[in-house]
Image 1 (tube, rainbow, N blue to C red):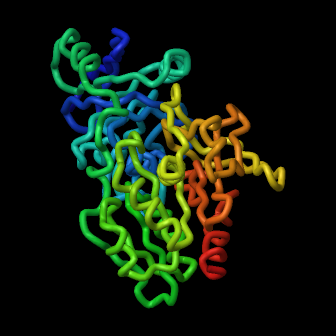
Image 2: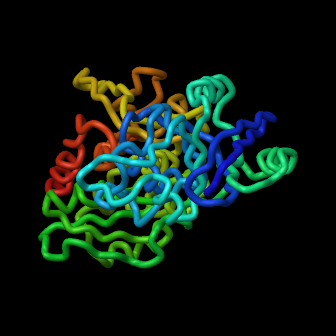
Length: 360
């Protein structure tokens, strides 16, 4: 049984706690998420690839694990940081506890940390490079690993989570959407399937002419991990496909659309991760509570002079939450309308996209 675990940060901090999950050492960017539930969805979200995830809610694992809640085929986060880990969960659909779940995918966990204090530290200093180890490694070696690893903005993560060949679902449905896969979540796919829309999941770097060979009625640019500016093939495909089909981007997908039309991207201090982000629609004035998971965003000042319009903003910090093209049927949302986890205030976004598809 794993006993001691350590979390080393690039600023020289080392935190000691109890290990659970798999006995190993993992590097990544230390980030926090504020959702009170949804640890299974978060751990399996491809957008957390390359990151050591910390949930701010103190109790984790209390309702166990079910593969019904997975957002991909398994855990994508590099490690899990918690205040308290529950060994004996209670839920009718649970098949295992949190520690066994992490061990199955060879992911380390650390518990017993003051996650409130660590969250405050990240808010003050920004997301930091870190190392989570459940092995016996000297402090100095861990600190060196934390400091010398490349930053998440320098790593190509999308190829580690996207499909490498086409995958077709819902072939019997009359209409279909091509998903440009940068790390799509299962809930995005299911949101289309339950609306009787077939899905063609395609590698983001597939030639745009071959994408059109599938004759989709619309293109969805998916969410995904890391720095969107590094995924140049996706940006190129959006440029080529935007005049041929209606297009909708979610999270990372909105940033790809922004880059394709001349906007700029910047790395946020600590990002938006959680299920409680307030977003205002600038046309209707309606405010929705949204689920988010991103560390990069479109620079709002860079939208001016492009063919894009800002349609929604975050009420906490004013960052862009929605964009639309002035002429083309192209739009994006920075948050996750499919939730998983999170509120369903903005689930209508899929219906809106499908109506635009039918119109064109």
